[in-house]
Amino acid sequence: MSPLSKKIVRYKVELISNKETYPGFVETVSEEDICLSVPPTMSEADSSPGRLFRLVINPPSGESVNLNCKIKWSYKTPPGGLLNIIAEVTDPFPTFKTFYQSLH
Image 1 (cartoon, rainbow, N blue to C red):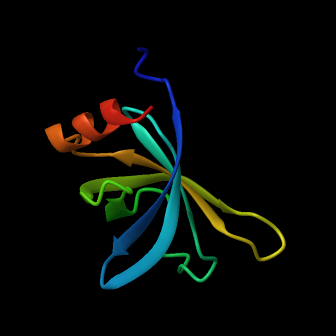
Image 2 (cartoon, rainbow, N blue to C red):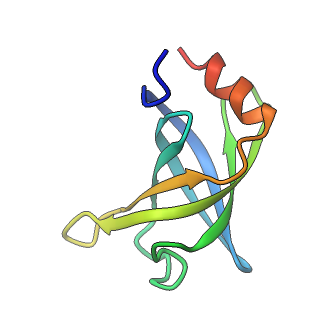
């Protein structure tokens, strides 16, 4: 499978930036990046490109996947909708690779 192949999912996540935690959903996953939706209440500072954060993915299997990520870009869906984030996985631990490969 090509490393650029994206898999469509809908898993709950927690995005942890500094001391703030934001709930959201992961929409697509590839071996290199993740597309997320979080509430529009996330601060501009926490959602700016280059910002590092920790992502906790909670799939139905019950086994959480913890990743360090960096925001590539983000945008809000109008009017006042969700904040969409494309994030790069900065430390593709074996756990993430296993998680990615298990997606159908």
